[in-house]
Image (tube, rainbow, N blue to C red; front, side, top):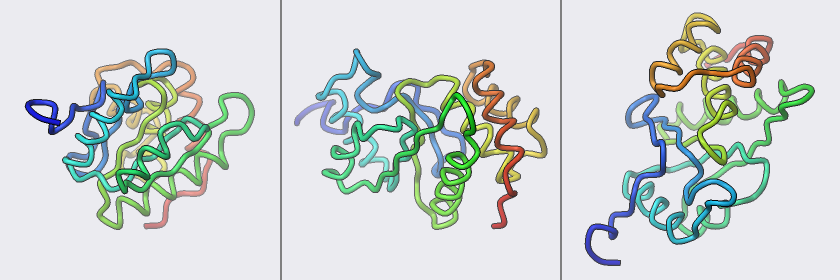
Length: 169
């Protein structure tokens, strides 16, 4: 690649949560029907150039994982159930995210699109890891950082997060 595309392009709705450590975005390449392989490649090149070392996908499917592996970016995949009990999946995801951040990794968290699932997991993580003082504060911080309101799915995920054993780091 040459020219302005050589450095890649930032994923859509890319937002730093902890600058230089944790960011969220839409899935590199776009969501489901709008997914483009070339765009995915350009966005992964950009992530690589920004020195991201881990990508945590909330898709629940292996989409993009092979592409991350090709670029030697570690990745994890967590399916967060929206019906029934999400606690176990959230706890496992939060523990991995906390380990990665404590190890100094630069992490991108994404779902198919930047939706209530991503925002709810993020806000839940902020509350669970005690980076905020309460569930309502984690919701307010997430809304302020992303410029998006948290809907019922996100708020349910935050509530589920508050019932989990607290982070011990």
